[in-house]
Length: 252
Ligand SMILES: [Zn+2]
Image 1 (cartoon, rainbow, N blue to C red):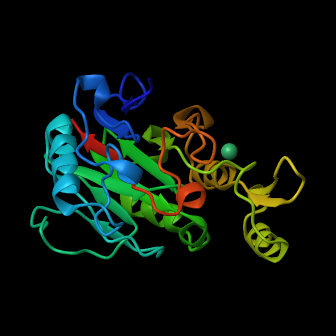
Image 2 (spheres, protein in one colour):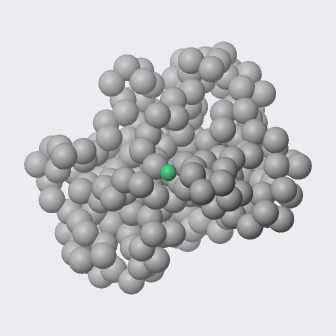
């Protein structure tokens, strides 16, 4: 069974980067506390799951990462927020990307089809976690996060990126007008479903934006499963009432 996708082994040396899944932390012998549609490792509050179960799952995640985990209230914006030394873990922060130079915190982005992107320059000691659905992507959240990393000393040639489990270009069907508007902005987004209808390939768009920012192609990993096809991941589009998994990263 696939469980916690431990992406750290050699992929981003100097960081611990993970994408959780529905079956959560089973790879380290931990069962999540959520049940039914949220089972067993939902990390999203306010999706209809029991708060106590979510808090227990977040506690397990934090223990696994060895650091408190910073979450944000995601609004499909292009707002990047810094997790600085005064970060208040109990406050609500509206943002769709987090950046930090701290080694004693982990950054988390919650998704269920939207694209989670983890970035790090571990030489400079800068990391980011980005929530890029269609709206945030077209709002340029990803370039915004990269530029906040550069401002803190990251260098594109030393950065690595993980484009996590999300809807693939064959599954993310959209109306033709939506497709055409998006592709006018970022041509690499164009895709078709197996039935030949219009779709968007956000991963291809992300690769293009990261390459334009100066990342080497070999430093970008997007070989994670499609949430629309792999039932080990929560999928809002497939299930509607469902949980959230996370992409999380911590500098070591
Ligand atoms: Zn797919």
